[in-house]
Image (tube, rainbow, N blue to C red; front, side, top):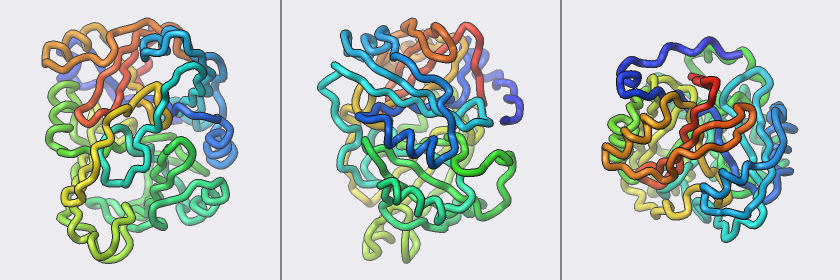
Length: 338
């Protein structure tokens, strides 16, 4: 299990609400089976819950009359970092989120990050399941951290970042065997400072780390950019989290010089792919009032829905500046994981 959660920062508490790092990512899929093969059969996760999607949630998403099934997947030793699969019927029209995208195209949720012990060995296993990368696994330094990382895409345009730590030694992941829990999620943005202003100034998130490079180094690169152009494409990263941690964190990524497309349209439910991240919250109505007072609109007002295993929750949604759909929920029994 993960260590106990640290206390929430007083700067957030004084606003009348408290947000934790995201506890789950929601994937809307055409067929749950290849995703179960990935996470459970290959990743060593378990199914914590299987059941029907609350129709009140589907109505709040603008699809009254739709029905759905869901599967809540989790690392067997972790109480956060879940993946919730949803398969919907009668929810059309449904598009693919970030359809036909390149890594430098902005909009929506770009990937889900999991740690692995041996990324090359895991890449071979994933390819056998018909998941494929934009480039082979690449070793690179992210500030003081050395990692070997592989961006891999599978059904419904779901993309994972499989990350092997090279140095310094990884701490707090004694449970790591196949896939870790989902600990971070990236969003490709047009302007990191604009996106940061939303997370920091509207939601009260803190910066966990920053990194910038004027161009990719010669040779293979994580994004699969052509070698002749890679040095002209910059990379700016900023990881944010309500308490400044890297567990349930959001990574804002910009690739200046790439000239990517804007894919923010349809970047949320009920469309196929990485639809939303869900953040446990206390004081959901205070959060709604605060957000509206900043001039940022609610994408979905506080709504009561049933969300297993929490029971009835109050849930609202916001859109980040580049279209990512974010949901914040308050359960009767607080769920404030990292």
